Structure formats: structure tokens, C-alpha cells
Length: 342
Image (cartoon, rainbow, N blue to C red; front, side):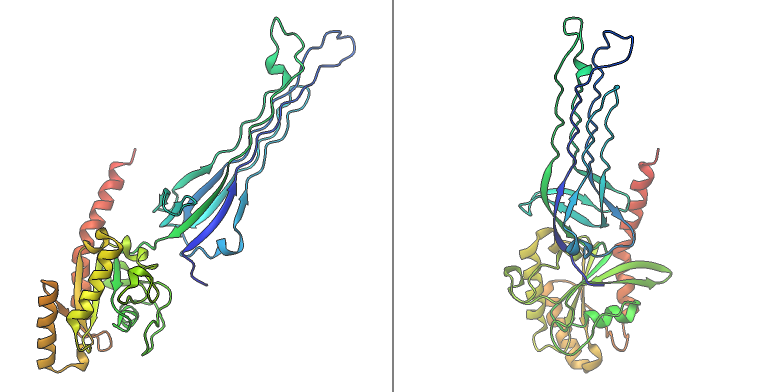
């Protein structure tokens, strides 16, 4: 399945049916009077978050979604049938943006959440509605209200507990493949990862979801490389795992590059809890490892963990550190859901 995280859609709710001008005509009834029915209501356009989807690829092949219009009213006081609604099924974590791609209309973060995107038009009144003591035979009816037409953008931000960030070839895909059943592409050249990958990670009987995004380079916030288009997929993460290539000649500069791009993208993202790990230590001797770890700690102003995704040295300790950051957020979510139960 191809990955698509941004899609443009055109929607239109159904128009209301027109009211009917009709008069009762029956044998032996001389003054039947008006009996025109009202028009039916137009269908609405909804968006709903569902389970089982993690891409917007369906919206590449269908961009237009038009709800049915209501039927016109008929004689014998018959109201027209209402138009059927149409529902856009989107993955959980989808933001719905206005045409300017900046105004957020809705953010569907949980399966089952629904939002009304376009309300159907009301049906028009038939001439029976206008009958009164002074107007016994009205000969006019209302037309139905037109539907609402909009152009919207759907932007997917994957929901993961932990997000992997780092320069290209920092070992992010190797680490994800080592700790989960995900099978991202792994190779010895930059930008091996072209789309985000998700993996379910287990440690000490606990499970959480980890997201791997393509590597960042200097100037990514300005569009260089793959740009910052995928940073939104770790924006919802509770903790970031920053991997630094231990075989690099200047690990401090590598870490500084990533932190600069995070701040340039969003201060909220940069201020998230972050665990910094010096990766690929299986390729370093003890003296070099100590030197580069000290340089990295001086750069970030905090502790640095070490591991090797290939030999799995230190991997369990890193996963436990991630779970320490994730566990409190799980408890908070459970408490919030319990509080909202009727």
C-alpha cells in the first residue's frame, strides 16, 4: 500500500428539494384547497475517523464527494425524500484544513470521532404551508436551499507514543526493525527511508507504538532534502528518541543540526521530552566512545545513552527509558476517558 499523508478533496452537501404547488382535486369536493408538500432536506457531508487505516491513499483516486439532494415535494401533502449523507472515512490522526491549508477545521485523533463538514440545504415549503384564513388558495411555494460547496485539505499525522529523529543513516530504521515487527528499508546510503514507518515495540510486558521518519538535514525547515514535511508524524509523540551516529567525526554538530531543525519547525515539538542516544557503538573502541559521548553530553547539556541497533547492545535500556516517559501519558488518557463516561 502506498503512503499518502496529504490530500485535497472537493465536497458538496445536497440541496433541499423545492416545495410543491398543488390543489386537492376529488369528486364531490368542490373546494379541496392546497395540498402541496414540502421538499426533502439535502444530505450532509461528514468526516469520520476509523480503525484500520494509516494512509490517505484512497483520496488520490477519488477527490469529489457530493451528497444527494432532497426530492421535491408532491401533491397530496407528500414531503419529498431527504438526500442521503456521505461520510469520508479517514485514519485516526487526520487534520481537516480549510482551503488555505492553515485553518484547522477539525482534528480527528480517535476512532469514531465525527465532524460535520457541510450541512445539507433545507427543503422548501409547499403551498399548503402558506394556507391561512385570509389566503385560502396560495399559489406559491419556496425553493429548497442550495448545498454548501467547499475545498478542503486532509493532512495525516500518525499517532505514535515515541518518534525517531536523526540525520540520514543514523540507524533509525535498523533500530525500529530490531525492536519491532516493522520491516523498513535498510541500506548504506542516505534517505533510505522515504515514508514514515510504524512499529509496535514491547519491553517488560508493555507495548507502545514507535514512528520512524525520513532523516533530516541542515536546512530541512527551508525545504532542503525531504524537508520538514514528515515532522508532523512525530508531532503527536509523547517522547522523541534522538539517534546520533557514533561513527560520525563530529557528533556534537550532528546533534546541533537536528535540534536546530526541530526548533525551526515548532517550539512545541522541540520542547517535548527527548532521549538522546549515541548509536553504532559496536564500531567504536572504548576511548573513542568515551570521547564522543562526552562531546555529545556537553552539546545537549544532559545525559546521553549508548547502544547498537545491530548488536542490540543497550537497546533494552533505551526502550525502558522510553517507557518511563510514555507510562504517565497512558495513565492520564485512561483518567480522562473515565471522567467522561456517563
